[in-house]
Image (tube, rainbow, N blue to C red; front, side, top):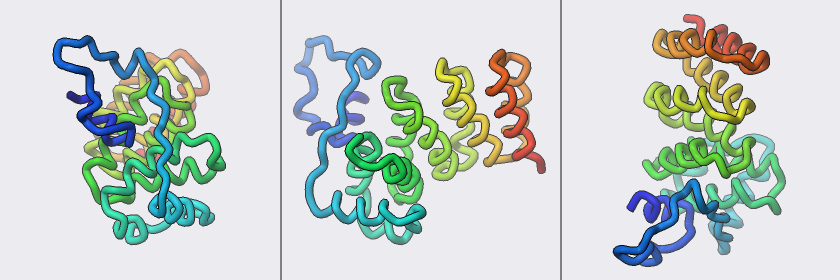
Length: 194
């Protein structure tokens, strides 16, 4: 059921395309799902906003409503879109007022098959979107196999600040063996200063 929901969020297909009852459905970890192309005027308008030098303000994304979430998710992984616009698409998800936006960011962050740059940007955007509610999800990624992601998560946590974040970063610091990730944890602690 969760996979079908993620498929709908990602714009892959309707729930009716889920595996028949009794059939063994593939897991998200076993079958990477390529993003479905999102044609139409919504994609064109979103690309227009993403072509600006910075991420458009919340009000610009609010007018689209939740329908823009799968469009932004697809654009984030569309390699024909310039990298800067792809990363702005991830960041824009933090500015869409819809529960699906937070769920999509979390799915991006947790999916090891997604590109590291998308996952790292999703970490920062999830912190922006959920604030302290993102701490538990981000904390779990401090143990991810991808060291660049661990760096990004440490910095995203640091930007949130607060005593709980300090505890999380201090707890992880002695366990981290990679020097550049240890440095990111230290930077996160500096950012988290009260």
